[in-house]
Length: 86
Length: 231
Image (tube, rainbow over all chains, first blue to last red; front, side, top):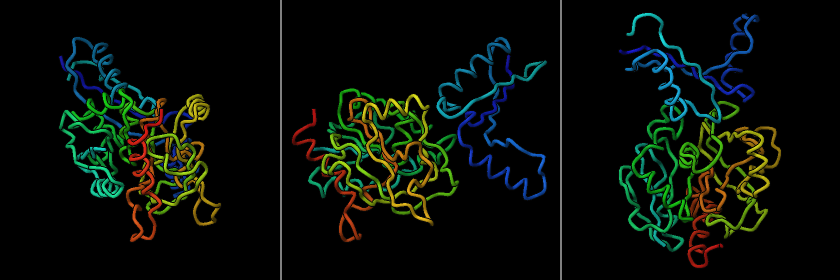
């Protein structure tokens, strides 16, 4: 079975995120004062062949630890599309 | 001394690195990133640039190049390895040096001279300088902010593994620490001191015709090291 997996990668909490700050200032300049705590990261989507959604998630976690996210500077979240495999 | 300069797709200043080695009295040659051996090199230089377009993260893909296994073995044997700029980023991604290099605090790509203080002089790449000496050499990077957990920074300081620190005079137009690096760190070394990563480009300012040869000491250090290796 093939599962559609989405990975959200954000700068590690507490680490200076100048991109997030710049976007936050730009939003304020556009009169969106209600926006705060802005962070800029990256999103990765991929298909994973695995026997179950849990297996797919476990494999992607290993991919994140070894390549897709930097363990020193980034945190990540994994979401496997619910329902029928892709 | 035979020095391998590794070329990745997107490397830069590798001819400058070769020239600086040769002017210091060494023999320099290129090694392609797909090569699996270092052809008997005594030392390795990973040059600057934008290997693999900086895709994913700077240095993240280059880390898997076939040549990296040979570099890992070379480093483990205690032989000298220098990563300049993107080379430093690659060494961090490869786990040969701790910490990481992320987007400059000011978000801008910076290309300009900086003043750095030589904090450690018993490495293969800094022994021609005096401890505390301040030299002015160029930087050219967008991802040069060195970060690491506070415990690791404390350990690096305690073990004397900060090799260069940004040390410019306070300047209204330009901060002495150009990229927001933790503890003003511009270069670090491995526990054994043989693997050094630095963000500035010494090979870009290594002969007087360019106005200064402040960076040439890095390459002269390597020749001195080869004559009398630092224990």
